[in-house]
Length: 491
Ligand code: PFF
Image (cartoon, rainbow, N blue to C red; front, side):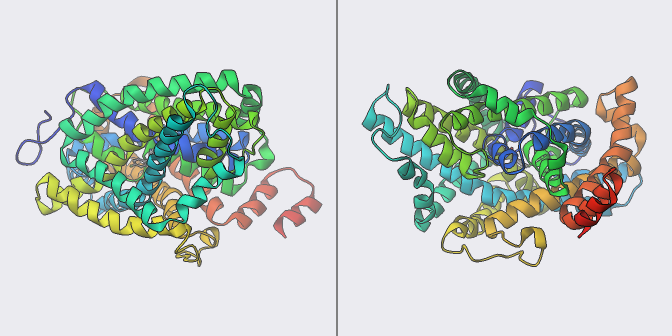
């Protein structure tokens, strides 16, 4: 147990490896299996992927360490942890605003994350039923047209009550585990489900590599074409890096608060970021070969995992079994992430209201359920509702997409910029040195990244992503293109 800086005994991870598993569990989720391939495919493949890796190393990793460090020092919910670091640094408690923003963003993400979690449950049902009907050895969905398989998702979208039911079901499971607490709920899920996830994941990746079009997938994901690296692609990549590493939204700060003093946070952050990035890249290398081998398009976006992949499973031996294993694996990954999304606001409500954990969990859960219904219905019943139409980059976004866009592209980068300024410039350097577990050159590099590189780079990317047309003009001015082309780009 971790000693408290407040009153009473605080909950904590039972060991360093439990912390790592829980944090990796938070990081690895729908972001890796569903969002990463979709974003890579929609944003031109290699340019996105390589810039994504750059973002993880130069921005994600330093921010991750900054967040867990604040949490571990504060030993409380995210806003309270920031306030305690500020107090111990003689700085204004007003900095806790980015902790509160993070908690709110985590709550928003939770509400739509469970909608996608519900789709995963649906596909588990679809493949289980198919396995029962077509048997073990053949391909999935024997005798059915590809269009039938593709239509499963629109069919689900068209059924509002099923969408809402699945969403609430997934959320209820999440609430159940978070209400049980850190060691018997969240840690339990991570310790049992993450190893099973990794076994299934490795199996499916190897299967994808041997039975699909692996070479084409590698070329697609790793060929860098600088001309594709626009402001929007860069913001999408940085947003994806944050989403995938659970950053900028208080998730990792909250988990850091349960880490013991003995845990080396620098080392642990490296393990978390490494594992998450490896899973994202391997997920790309598992999904794209299968999709390419079936002659399907990489840019199918959000439909890639739910439409293209099931079609691809049709042509494969053991297709229903592989499909079932795949979606069970995604379910495990999604649940270990959704518990962290719920834990961030729950810890806040519990601390702020001095409420018992189950009550706090339920309050947040009911809020997420109400908001989640709007997301669940935004694919059919409320498809024309565009809440952020006044912001050009979100003009076309329905309620679900608007929440996804606004959290990954605004809340997360802004939260991270504030975290860097706070840790790099405001907090007492001795306090930070004492927590970060880095020495020598690594410490200097990290400090330089947090103080200068991350905030500057993030601000540039944020502006470039929000105002793409201005960014294009600036990029062309900076590049050595002839004047004629410059005029075209600006116009
Ligand atoms: N990192 C998770 C994923 O990749 O699916 C999503 C997530 C979890 C984002 C927790 C933010 C968070 F606080």
